[in-house]
Amino acid sequence: MPIKRVFTKGFSIAIRARGRAIIFIFLFIIATMTTILQTSRIYSYETNDLIRLKGVVLNPTTILTADKLDNKLSDIYTNARVYLSGIYVVYGLVLLDNQVMIVSVKDYRGLYQSLELPWVVTEFKPTTIIEGRYITSKGEALIGTDFSLSFEKYGFPLTTKLSVGDVLTFTSGTTEISVKIVGVVESDLSELKTAGGLQVDNIIFVNWETFSDIAVNIARISGPIESSSRIYVLRVILIAKGSAIYTLLGGDMFKNRENIKEVVDNSGDKLRPLERALLDEITPGVYQSSVFTLILSLIFEIFIAGIYAWILIRFRRKDIATLRALGWDAGHLRAFVVGEFSGTLITGFLIGVIIGGLYALIIERLPLDILPYLFVLIANLVVPLLIGIKSTSRGVIKVPPLEAFRRA
Image (cartoon, rainbow, N blue to C red; front, side, top):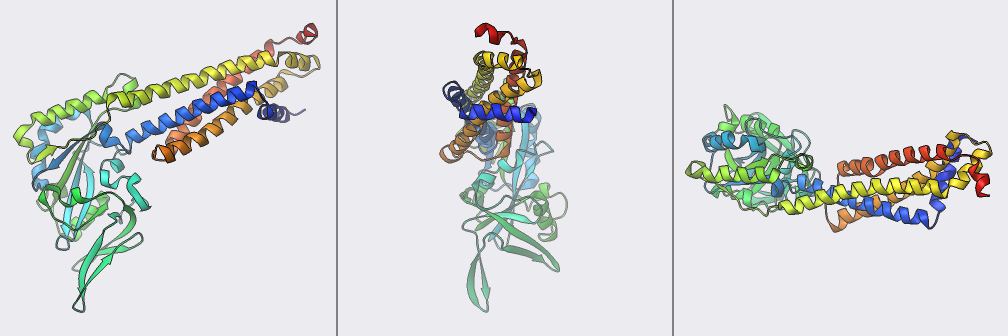
């Protein structure tokens, strides 16, 4: 009999099994649900809630232009650099008689992490998009739900509202730069519209390449854009160094966050008009609870995989001995037992992923991404499966053929 057919037979036995197998399927479901929920939550902390977890935000109380920023941040860059994974500055360029402000974010002095960039501007996070998608290349933009432009045509005042798919073209002499709207966010943009005392009607968010292109070729700004007196500083975001893995290895992102705040507070008048914003921060207890629960779920999954492999060999001992006495070789016996083990584990895993994923998405409203599911696939399926295969394969060989006759 082909080994594949024997494996399939064992798998089908697990699917149809009652009692013992049902109990372990339920345990595998619980472990997988817990892992996927906690993994999604930690991933959400590191992305959607990045500012609440590791951020220190500085907002201007009066108008601040980019040419004055280096003087403001020099002490922070020097004294807090060891605690930082990134410094990000949100810049603005006002066009069309204050009707539109082009906004973008850029790292400060090359201190950044590429994975953090989409999440540091709270109003334009990927999870705030209610229509369309996030920007991925030059010439694309995000807007708010109330974006509209006023103009006159044939002497009559007109207003047009933009949405996904529309193209906004900026002109200066013979130069034209078109920006396509690819997404609309639900975020309240009032904080950016009035940053430092500015008063603009609309915000359009673009990547840095598009922002630079418009600044140089439309606004005719010469020299480094980040040092121009015509570019406004809308916000400065400081991100503390640390992650879940970093925390487990002994690093303390929360201590880094507090050290950054201490450096900012000690900067005094030199930092003005930048002031530290009060944030609804994620506490160490909340974060560490999720990490601890995740670790326990992984240990539990591996433990029950080992226990189930041992029980399966004990329960199938007479069957294995009988099959060996009938001439089945080790390969076929391993396939049979591994098939039953795999059927139980995979069934529990799939049900757990479906239930846990739906709960995380619908009830917890956590951001949906492939990375947590890849982690769960490895941690809750591949690792326990390898442990089970090794344990059952070793157990099958240890059952002698004479066991069938002694038990008879």
